[in-house]
Amino acid sequence: MILCANPKYQFLSKKNKIISELKKTLYSNKYVLGKNVESFEKEFSKYIGVKFSAGVANGTDAIEIGLKALNIGQGDEVITVSHTALATVSAICSVGALPVLVDIHEYNFLMNENLIKKKINSRTKAIICVHIYGQTANLEKIKKITKENNLHLIEDVSQAHGALYKNKRAGSYGVISTFSFYPTKNLGAVGDGGIVCSNNKTIIENIKKIREYGWNQNRISNIKGRNSRLDELQASILRVKLKYLDQDNNKRKLIAKKYLQILNSKKINLPQIKNFNEHVFHLFVIRVKSRSKLIKFLNKKKIYPGIHYPKPIHLQPAYKKILKKKNYLPITEKVSKEILSLPIYPELSIKDVIKVSRTINSFFK
Ligand SMILES: *Cc1c(COP(=O)(O)O)cnc(C)c1O
Image 1 (cartoon, rainbow, N blue to C red):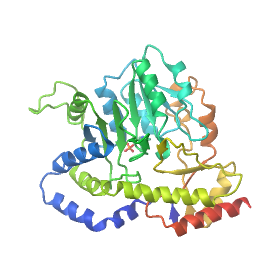
Image 2 (cartoon, rainbow, N blue to C red; image 1 turned 45 degrees about the vertical axis):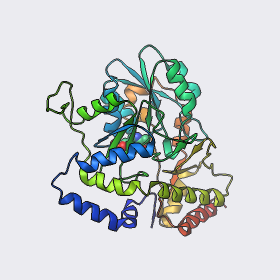
Image 3 (spheres, helix red, strand yellow; image 1 turned 180 degrees about the vertical axis):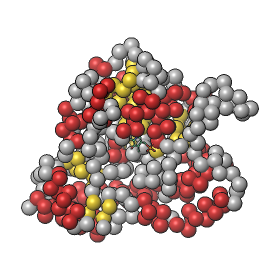
């Protein structure tokens, strides 16, 4: 069976180190927001190239609490895309702000920076750019737009841990950047986890308050908070895995290279990689017109690709009332019917990559 992602193999490949760290943590008598979280925040900041980080419970909270720390809420608008994980948009709604959605580029699925300006008005407070599938959006142009219009740039980096844009890490460009450590992500825990990064000390201090009831050092809540803490077991696993992130991303890149070499039908649209960035292939997404037939064909051969995501957020039942009419997104809607995520994870063997590629080629023959 060849699955789209396989976090168990991630664990097995680093089993001894992970188990020994977990044992230390289990005997430590500190299980939430302790030394491992503190060390991980420092190590992750250094890796991304920012000054500060705050661990939180998941990637959705990272966005929501990040928005709160920037004082974004009721009456404000936040520009982002509909072609993303539901979390990006739900976090904006959770703070009471209105998501304003722009369409994507057909060739790389990323936010179309040329469509942003006409969506900006006096209520606009921030742009969340999502580095979907492991490739960075056009950060230079988007950052320029945010500067010219006095907006916050937020990077949702949940699919691009370790990606580079012009030799700097994704996540080092925004006023804040947010990451998820869901098990299948390029850096994954064995449960939920997330982090917010920033060069702004005050913002990170506020996030550290909000994540624990609004408490300061004396357990006084001068601001309203909630509970969204990263735990020590997850942090100790993340500390082990962070050391291997570049190595694991290189394995993903090799797999992608192999797919690009072997997939040969004119009926397959292959992902395009811009040379200004280093794609870390969280997902390897092709576009095909005959998607459901191809999936059935692959499933018969025990190959299980995924779809990220089958329905754009502005068409989801819970969101379409507020988002469908206001947002005309023809490219987003078109690609959602054609995208297919092929199996990719660091431990996937090249033999299996060749098998998947040849099976797909044979379907189109
Ligand atoms: C996974 C993901 C999130 C949400 O992370 P959770 O940890 O599941 O809350 C947010 N944005 C993007 C782009 C994601 O891929």
